[in-house]
Length: 380
Figure 1 (cartoon, rainbow, N blue to C red):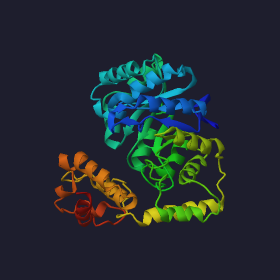
Figure 2: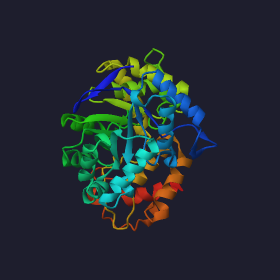
Figure 3: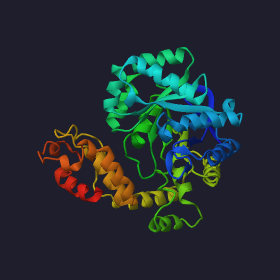
């Protein structure tokens, strides 16, 4: 395994591959019931492969991920061999005291006295306002001062402009976590955001290098593109090497559901160099990316300029779900998410009144009301 460092944390080295604890094996598909025997095998294999960064969160597996992580590391006698990361559920925090309440419960779940890497989970422009309003800076400074957390960062889901605002909003950030892969070069923070954070001295952790596994199980057309390189290489290897080729990426997280997946990804992370991808390989990746992007239903970059919608329609979020369906084919899962996260709360495409307030704001020139009608048909 190769190891990399954070600019603001000299002397601390983490594995280029981190173990994500969001997609562990479950019992009968119940996210709240982790198959602990199989999951423990994955953690054990990760340790054997040299992985020393483990990432969990308050909400993963309906709250059971943190508990399992604590039990697993203690049963394997491995707590001192790894760095544990977890995340503050900002959506539950409404006042200053909530920061301590959730952190203390997370420490209890993890059976630990400290957390190595503590992130504010899924920051966005609205949640950044919540962070400031509830005294997030003061809370994290206090927790770091008393030793409950060692290093402070944030994970992110919003536009590039919001990302820059958050990076610049506090000089206490030591690292950030963003979604990035060869398809999502310009998605949310994207490549430009990674470069921006790195220039500010933040270590960058990448999540979704395989886009939830979709880039490990690519369509036959994409397999043919990769085969044109002339050398056998799994789709997951192409995706992981794309991320790890960047000097400004410290580690990339993957939620591996089996020991075999763990060893395959660990082998790639061990061998992947920085700035090692050739022009020919880059051309292959560009072709694969183009294949995916050509199948996107709408050219929305989720910049969020169209918001707020007077009727509360979650415009970029709906377009993102629609694109996922047309590119990756996950209609059942995306439709379910659309109904539970947006339609049921009055933020669905059917809430659009065609007032047109969004039209002059869209830098892509999308006919938003018209496309929302199409998205509604695709997602219901």
